Image 1 (cartoon, one colour):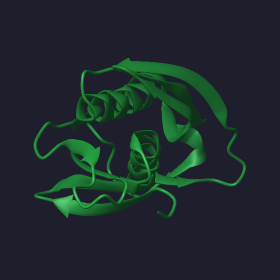
Image 2 (cartoon, one colour):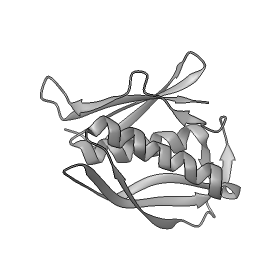
Image 3 (tube, one colour):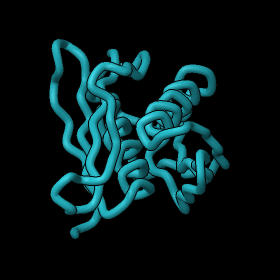
Length: 141
């Protein structure tokens, strides 16, 4: 399977992020990149920082929602846009890794800021046809 990817689409005025990848961790990283792409384009001079992150959830879908909620919280509270997830490790009910973040002042906005992740249509699981993993989540704008 090719590297993980995301696709963005409008969903009733909100944003849908669909992800595909070889495993859960790759899909989680793709979801973070998709959320960032919906917010804006990072300027070339942007300084990237790494913030350790740990989220828990009893299912891959719960970890997906929790991760994106943390990314939105960093944007709201700290003015930091998460642009990637590095070294994601999933074990039992826990995701650990490092969010790559940039200051919102180093982002050229292309869309409205996300408000929240919804449970509507949220899922992340192995592809039933055996082609890696796939998932989808809707974000309120």
